[in-house]
Image 1 (cartoon, rainbow, N blue to C red):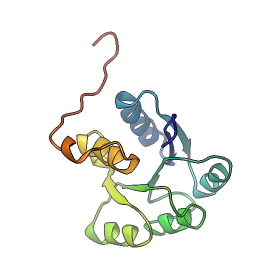
Image 2: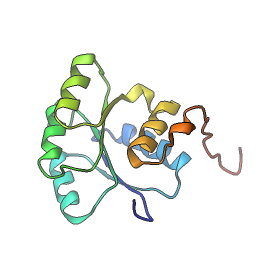
Image 3: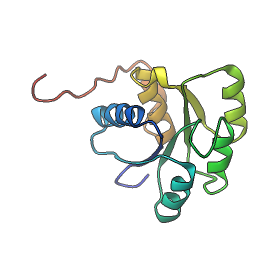
Image 4: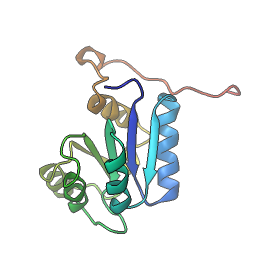
Length: 143
C-alpha cells in the first residue's frame, strides 16, 4: 500500500456521504477520501487516479443494485470493493459478491466497529491477532 491511503467513495446521497466520510476520518484522519455520485464519475476518476479501496452504494442514479459492482469492475478489476446498501439481503449480498464485491455492508452498520474492521481488512491493516482489539474513534478538543 502507498504512503497515502486513498479511498474512492461512490455515494449519491449527500447525507450518507457525509456520515461515511466523517466515520472514516474519525478513525483515520490521514486517509484521502474522494467522493463521486455516479458510476460515470467513478470511471473518470479511476482513469486518473489509483485507489486502495472503493466503497460504493449499490443504488446510484446511473446504476442499480448489485450490477453497480459489475459496472465498476469493467474498469477496475483489482481494487477491493466494499458495497454499501440500505436494504441488505442474503440475495443482494450473494449477487454483489458474485459480480465482484469483496464485501457487502448495510448502511445501518457504518457507525459500528464492523465497518472500520471491514475497511481495515480490505486495506490489509487488520492482523489476524487484532480480532479482539477495540478501536476508539478520535474525538475533537472538546471531547
